[in-house]
Amino acid sequence: MLDYPALVALGAVIDCGSFEGAALRLRITPSAVSQRIKSLEDRMGSALVIRGQPCRGTPEGMRLAHHLERVQLLEAELDPAARPVMRIAVNADSLATWVLPALSQVAGRLFDLVVDDQDHSADWLRRGEVMAAISSQPDPVPGCDVRGLGCLRYVATASPAFAARYFGSGPDAACLARAPSLRFNQKDTLQEAWARRVFDLRTPLPAHRIASSEAFLRACELGLGWGLNPEPLVARALSEGRLVQLHPQPEDVVLYWHVARRMQHMMQHVSGEILTAAADFLRPMRKSA
Image 1 (tube, rainbow, N blue to C red):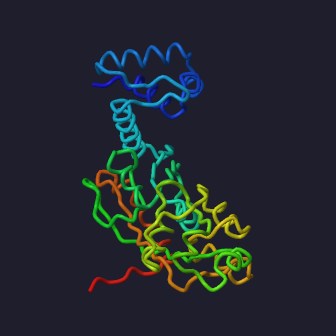
Image 2: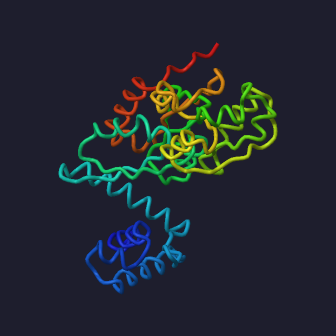
């Protein structure tokens, strides 16, 4: 049997990023936290915490922390007053548009939302670090079930002044190779995929990196660069003339809901709200031929 108070101390250190923060949360001294971690490390025969600023869990430490989360969720099912934390990986644009209204319909739960690119969010499930993920990956992660959500449509947009400066006669491969684009982060390949598909452009795009959906849109409006934005997020800016659509060809990203099979029962209400919101907000998925 594992030492439960020591596991709680480990989870607190990883969550808070320090022994002092964990001590405040648990209302014990930092020395007591350190003793509990050392006792657990001695029992497991390996280091569980990488001391630093912030403190991080080793692979073995993270495995134990995730075990603790699952135990706490199971215990919460027996205690109506408990408010378990549900960790979900979600792409930024879904978070900025339709996911929060869905989660707001779920009472008695706390959420820890991990933001990652839709092409990589399922990796969090694969590592056992979340209970569910919104991903562009159609194949189920081992040990998980998957449901199709729908298509989030993106359109290429820029400010009128930016479009006139760089795309006076309309976008083409040569113009796109020169014009500054916007990129969410190093994982974001959406703009380059669209340019390759529509214009057969194979060279990397010059790009600003802006890791915020709202700031990404604002940067487009201010003429910092061009980028692919979710159609629902830019509808008003387009109608008011703050943005123009550079090309009629959109980019549709198909999204899927992956849930760890062992968490299906506990995630049932969340899954229902996610599926309902997706059906209302996203475009229907194309049927396979």
